[in-house]
Image (cartoon, rainbow, N blue to C red; front, side):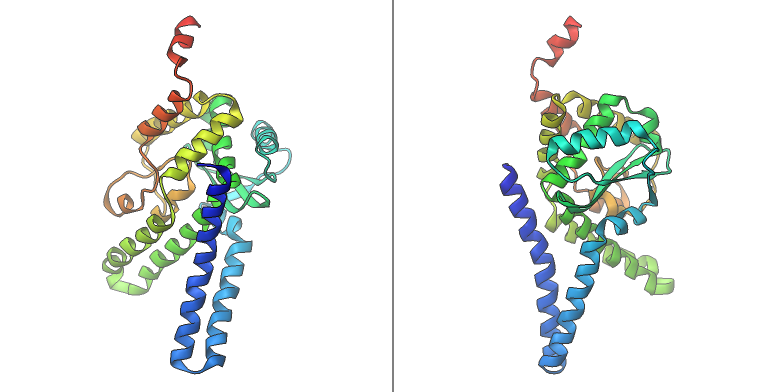
Length: 281
């Protein structure tokens, strides 16, 4: 899929995320009162949407407990982000660190022109080789370039808000969660296609000049998931490079990533002679 098609598709989804709730608010206000109440309801929705849009990156990084890195911290990571952002033609995102031993990375925010962030866990920095780290950073920058990150962040924010409503249930919180969980998951699946990950993988391979760093990184992440369990809101699944959650229970409803094996196979296929090169080395 071409860059323009991907960007256009995501911009349309973003406008729908704004337009549909605004129209619904206006209709509700009109049914309950008159045009003044309709304007009040619609204006409230637009104001809330504007806040989420402008602070999307900070909302998402706050959800995962990340903090922004100082300019002198994790220099290899920051230099990799600088180099690949320039190559991808996107504004340099803010770089965050997640104090967590579980290897993971994510991107969030508005998109290619600014207001975006990349977060990497201390566990990933500890185990990833330079080529693997480069592949993961390139993958997240590809989401910025394609504007996937805007739709992903909006979808996660709305889905997380729906899940949080279950806390109002008191003693019936668990039952309410099982009712609202499928609704939140349906929202994410409606907005997010697994194909966005294949597109981002392909762009990452182009940015790195090789598909193998990212392919090796995905295999490393898969190994980590088999060893260590990951606990967080399953609504955040679309933000990550790969699904870090065990596909069981309510978390299985939120899986928007394609299987890691299929992603690795597609990446290797971009360099079909890689086995011969490996034997020669």
